[in-house]
Image (tube, rainbow, N blue to C red; front, side, top):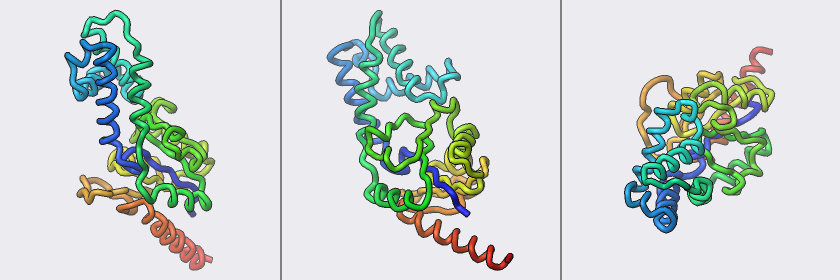
Length: 238
C-alpha cells in the first residue's frame, strides 16, 4: 500500500523559469545602481552562465544552487574589478524574487486533500523556500540538495526521505516533471513514480514512469486506481 508521497517543486507545482528570469532582471537592475561595472560587462544570462563555470571548477558546489549563485556573483565582481562586494545583499534581491512564484491553480486544493490521507514531503534540487511561497504548511518536511549534499537523481535525497518518513521505498510515490531527476532517480531508489507532463512533451527514452498526468489533480485518480488494485490482490491472495 502507498504510505507517503514526495513531490518535486520547480515546474511541478509552479512554472519557474519566467520567475527566475524576472529575478535575474531585478538583480541586474540592483547591480546597475550599486556595482555598475558588473551589468556593463555581463547580461543577466551571462551572470547565470558563470555558475556553470564555477561548477566546473568547484564540483563540491555542483549540487548547491545557492552556493553557485553567490560564487558566480563574486566571480563577476572580481572580473569587474570590485575589491568589495555585498554578495549577501545581491543574492537576497534574487532570492526573494525567485520565490515569488504562483502555484498552479489545482496545487493547494489537491495537496490539502492528499495531506489528509498521506504524509507529504518535497524533494527539490533548487533553492525554493516554501515558507516564502506559502505552501510550507502542506508538507511534513522539505529537502533540497543542499540539505543532503547531493542532487537528484542521486540516491541520498530519496534515501533521506525514506528515513524521515520511516517507510519502505516501494511504499512511496514520487511526483515530478523531470524524467531524469524525478522519474529515473526515484525509480532507481525503489519509489513508484508519476511524471507530471503539463506541456505534452514526448518521453525522452528509458524506463517510463508508472503513471503520467497533465495536472496535479489527476494524481488522486491514479492513487485510487493503484490502491484499488492492491486491495483486489490482497483479497485474491487471502
